[in-house]
Structure formats: structure tokens, C-alpha cells
Image (cartoon, rainbow, N blue to C red; front, side, top):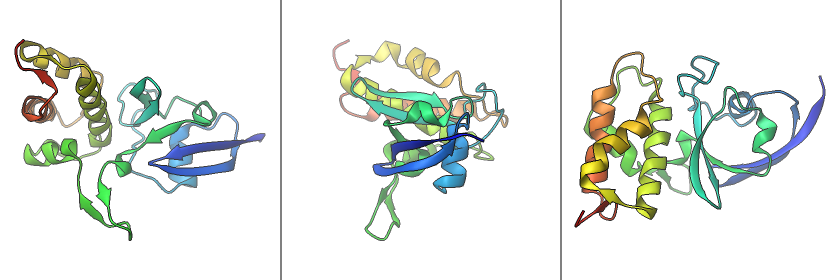
Length: 180
């Protein structure tokens, strides 16, 4: 199998160059080369979005599915996986979860948790976008729906995911326009 070098930054840590087979999907690199198993392999067709990571670039953050996107597409890019959201101490122990993760915990927003990493990443991208471009309070429901709708939960935990994100958006200063 032909290989090529791959260098990327994951959760703030540079990796590479790694000798990675051409055509290998990023989820396999995350699991097998980087030992980051929080990103889930669900359907393998990019439909369920359990495999979603965040790509950070000059335009901001965006979601990317890793089960259908070749690892080499990410060469030179900065990505975040679900493992990168919490704050950690020098030894690597979690000292605080992100606001999105805390909202999901507060709302008991998962059952089996398999799809949760994708939902966490989608909600994080939404919150980051709203921090740059706040929306009217009347538009929050639609915006949360648009952000989360592509993600599938086989346990049907949607209501709690949506409630958690809606409440987080409404209570976080700067995400909603005050006079709109």
C-alpha cells in the first residue's frame, strides 16, 4: 500500500510527519495512530455524523466528517476532537469541561453517548459562530435546529440535546442580540 507523509495539529498538539497510507480516512488515523478514540465510527457513510471533528482555519471553525474524508485532506490543518474541549492540568487530568459539555451534563443530554462527540462538536461550532455574529432571540430555536439536525441519535435523545444547546446560547452573554 502506498503511503504519504501527513502532518496535522490535533487539539493544539502537532503530529507528524506520519507515514500514512493513501486513501485512509482520518478517523482511522485518530484511532490507530494518535490513540484518540472519542471520535466515533458510526455509519461509515458520513450520514450519522458521530465522526465529526472541528477544523479551525482563518475563517473560523467548521465541522468535518472523518469517516468519509481522507486523512491527507487534513494535511497542515488544525483540528479539534472531543478530547480537546475540556481544560486539563499539566499531568493531563481534566480540571473543567467546556460550557457545551457542561450544558449536556446539566440536561442529561445523552443515553448511550455514542453520538455525543458529534453533537458536542456541532454545538461548539455554533457557539463559536454566534460569538462572532450574534442572532436575535427569536432566531435561536431555528439556529440550534439547523446546527444539530444533521446529527443522528439512535437513542432519540434529540430533545435534551436541543434544550441544552438552546439554554446555553440564551444564557451565554454575547451570543444573542439584546435588542433584537
